[in-house]
Length: 123
Length: 110
View 1 (cartoon, each protein chain N blue to C red):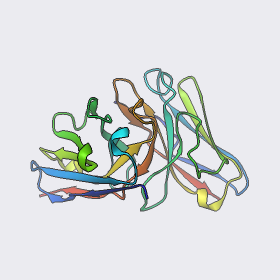
View 2 (view 1 turned 180 degrees about the horizontal axis):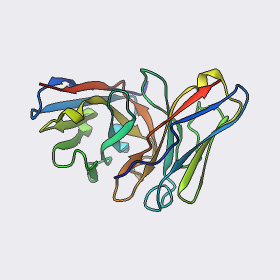
View 3 (view 1 turned 90 degrees about the vertical axis):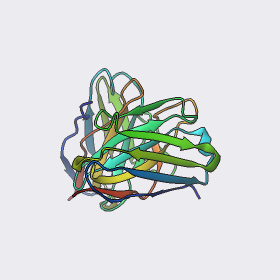
View 4 (view 1 turned 180 degrees about the vertical axis):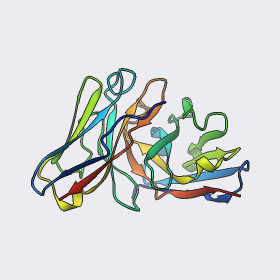
């Protein structure tokens, strides 16, 4: 079964850090770009960051650039999001998602999503 | 990085067709054939319904179709069914390896 399972969310004070993890199974992880997408309470989807199949391409939304770092470990089929200098506006449900396109593509469509993990930034 | 523009709501009766638009610019929707559409039900993760403008993943009913003209992409749901009710988001590759989402459209089946 193709599956993504996020972990690492929680309640954190403004200015502190948190690291999200996403464990992948059921597909060749190193054949696909991966992305993080978040959804603030009652709001729409917001793309956060993406990483190419081999880590050669990494990009971020302007809202998190300089504070968040995406990485992946293809040896253990895992995706990460290191979140530093967290702000109240980073409070959201964070999803990791797999691109459907294969190695040729960076963003073709996100066909597998995890169940998400909640990040709450509050004092 | 402005979001793509979607109508906040759309509705239709069972059996009818409804079309949701997604307007961007020549730097995103109009510049690439990498528009995708997602359906989200309350409390659930989004589900890919259309990718690469008009391709349908396996398992998605052919009642769902996608198209693009210029800077505007569209999702059409034909033969509306009660289970089609939910939030729909468009998304597009936006150059420089960036990605944009639309604000979302709440589809109501009357």
